[in-house]
Image (cartoon, rainbow, N blue to C red; front, side, top):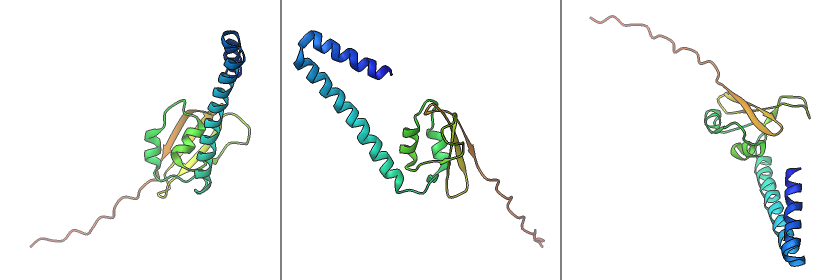
Length: 137
């Protein structure tokens, strides 16, 4: 909503200052800005479409790169894959999971499209078997 109001204020200021040429210039700039964001969105989704759902190369590296407030689009761009949705559709908060080849996974919670919290879970590793001790003579 704030973007639409800001755009209308810019167009009104351009009209007041420069008339129709100003409106044309500001409107062209706004359309260019919208097309840049649309192109980025399509590029990210195109890369994500070529990857398995919920797969990431390294959950540990993803965990290290995440920051509160990141958008879901930014996380999808980092992982190059859509997350496996764990929460019911169209309900807040949204939960998504990305898993790597070693069964480690990162579960992210998004509220209104922004990252609120996340958790890295690594599988338990079995202790190494003890070798029988040999008598030293």
